[in-house]
Length: 135
View 1 (spheres, rainbow, N blue to C red):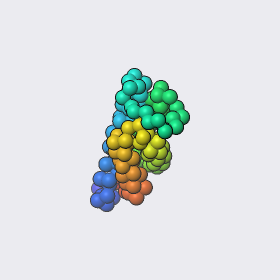
View 2: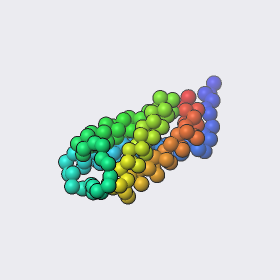
View 3: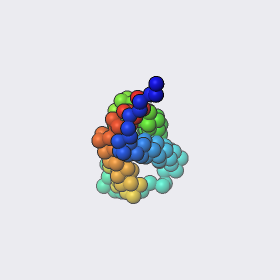
View 4: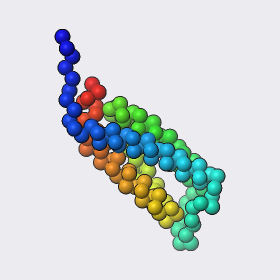
C-alpha cells in the first residue's frame, strides 16, 4: 500500500525562504560581532547617541545572537514548533538590536530590520505549512 503524502500548499517556499534568510542573518550578525570586537573604528559614533554597551559587549551579543539564529534556522527548516518559536523570538531580538544600531551603521541596520520583518511574516503566516509536509 502506498503512503499518502500531504500536498504542498504553495506557501512552503516562504518558510524555506525565512529559514535561509534567518541563517544568513545569523551569519551577518556574527560578522558584525567580529567587526565590533576587532575593528572598533568601522562604526561611527554620533555625539547625541546614548550607547549602553561598549563594542566588545555588542560584539559578543551579536555573535551569540547570530549562532542562535543559525541554529533556529535549521530547526525551522525541519518544521519544528520549537524552531518556529525560536525563529520569531530571535528575529524580534535582531530587529530590536538593529533598530538600536541604526544611528551607528544605518544601511546595514535597516537591511537587517527589513529581512527580519520578512522572516517573522513568513514564519507566523506560513510556518505550519512546512510542518504539515514534513509529517
